[in-house]
Image (tube, rainbow, N blue to C red):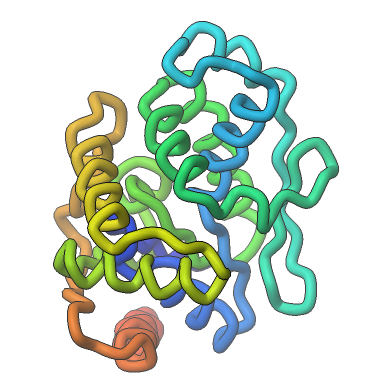
Length: 224
């Protein structure tokens, strides 16, 4: 089995690139960030204080997460309920960054992510895939982009979904999430020593996809 780890800050293009690469190769795409969103979603829906690590940890035994490819689109299920669309809000996103700092939450989800990676060829994206989840991944990519570029992407994405949010507010959320991700004590966001860094600022996604595929092809040739 071959694993590709794609890490980077919010809005760097991880999901977009990972989905497209997986689609072109016919591999499984695993959005680890969505798993943390599910935990945050569950807690918010059940009035669990996200700042209470002990309480959130206790609730983990009541959370069952499953992934399924439906019409080439990854759907994520919480206790057999499809919550793919419901977890894509700014509130859930911020909550995900918070619960991701809790060691018990990470322990359970990382274990699940590793199990999934052993079953099939996967493209997995997140914050600590190349450093913690899949340290032996055959290819590690670290995507970056300026905070303004990332905020602009998120702003346009929100607009397309009919969500009206001022750009300045989106930028502030991006910066706050960066601070949480880079400075958290448990598995902080950082580039793996053997990862290839790609700055996506100003570059269309198809160019980045082609570059990742090229790197994968080089690995395939060198292994023969």
